[in-house]
Structure formats: C-alpha cells, structure tokens
Length: 335
Image (cartoon, rainbow, N blue to C red; front, side, top):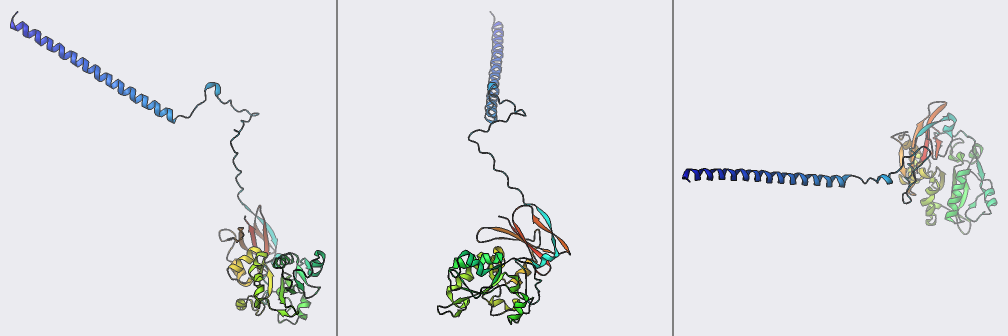
C-alpha cells in the first residue's frame, strides 16, 4: 500500500471522527436544552400550583344554590355586624310662636317674655307627695313653683348635695308678682317668668341666711350644677353682659350640654346665644363631646316668618328651643 492510500484513509478517518464528534455535540446540546426546558416547565407548574386555590374534587363540589335552598353558615363563622344607618336629616315645620318657648330663652332688659303656656310644679306639694320635705332642702314658702323639668333636675341636684341647710327662696313669678316684689327689673323682663330658674341660699344653725358663694361648703353646688343642666344665670364677672349684679345665687336651667359648654367656656347666657348664632346647620354646626362621653351637634336656624323649616335628624333624640329673639336652637344627641 502506497503512502498516498494511507494518507487518504487517515483523512477519511479524521473526517468521520469530526462528523461523529459534531453529532455527539449536537445530541449533548439538544439533551441539555431538553433538560432546561423540562426544568422551566417544572418550575412553572410548581408556581402555578402554589398560586391556584384549592378546588374540591368532583364528588366534593358544592351544589348550586336554588331559590328554595340556602347554604348553611359554617358553625365557626360569625355573621357580619349590621352597618349602622347613616344619619340623615329631614325638616320640621316650626311656627313663629315657638321662638318664645324652650330652655334657651333669653329674657333680660331688652328681651321681653311673652308668657307662653308652661307646666309648673308646686315644689312644696311635690316634696309632700315624695315624703321628702326638709330632708334635702328647705323652702321659704309653700307657693314656690318651677317648670316641671327644671324642678326635677334641681331636686336631683339638691338630693345629691344632701345638705338640708340649702333654702329655695324663690322661683317662678307672674307679671303681678314681679311688680309686687319691688325689683328694679320691670314685669315682663325678668328671667323668673320662665319658671326655669330659682334662687338658693344657705342657712345657719340659728336660722340666719348664709350666702352660698361666701361659704366653702356650698362650692359643690357651683362646681356640679352643670351636670344637672343648671348654670349661674348672673355670674359676678358678667355684669356688663347681663346687666345684673350681686345675684350669683340664682340658678337657671338650660340643659346638660349647654350648661357644660357655658361652664367650660366661661359664658353667660347672653354670650352663649350670640355664640350659637354663628353655628348654623351643616358644616358650621357646633360639635361637642361632653365629659360623660356623649356627643352632640348644635346649630342655629333663623326664623323665616310665620313658619320655618327646621332641619332635624330622621332618627335619634333632639330638642328645638327658641331664643326669644329671632330663631331656633336645635340640639341633636349623636351618641
């Protein structure tokens, strides 16, 4: 065999070897790619399985709910609490005569009282009926009258104080009684006409009168009367506003939330009514939370003539009081 034949064989062998190597390499690459694709698919299946919610087997599928069939609640599931209703407002038609009625009437030397019909209670008779006469407070006479709610709250206040040396000296007055009293305040312009007020004093062991404000043992009355809806009608530092001096033992019923505001803001009734006129219905309403945790909304509605449409809540408690001037004060207890 010649060298030429040997070289040809070697060349052919090398070419076959290269071809085999190429085929093997292609197979190896293909195998690696297949492994890679398989791994990717496997990872995708794992991820999808983690994300996919559990589906009951065919024999565990929940049957469809028909009109006469309601699915049972699981025993350990609590039904949702009902959503509290949104407080909406409607209107109440209020006649102009009610401007002169209510717990927030302003009666002074420039605001005359019109003497509307009110329910009065004889304090002496009430004490007799309750068999409490003289136990919690004394009376200067048997003919003292107070507006019903005001008396009930004053009775609670004096019962809580529990000192029988307190004496109620006067309360409601008619126009004739005001004239006969000799007061410098003419009939028709006295807060006493409302029946919402009363005068109190102390009494010594010998029966002599004692000023409440000058004796420390009566301080509790001044500090706590607002809780029962009362304020001092003529504070010593408000003479310029009220026009009355030396009468700090005269208590006036206005209702709890208003007494709270007047006390905490140091306002007399004249100042308080002026304040409320700036708080009209809507965004301007006065919102307050009192010290007992109750929430209120208070707003002023100016009278528009013989009849006024006053916004009121469609549920919950509220009161409407005239101011004895030109409008109405609405007090809504929110919670």
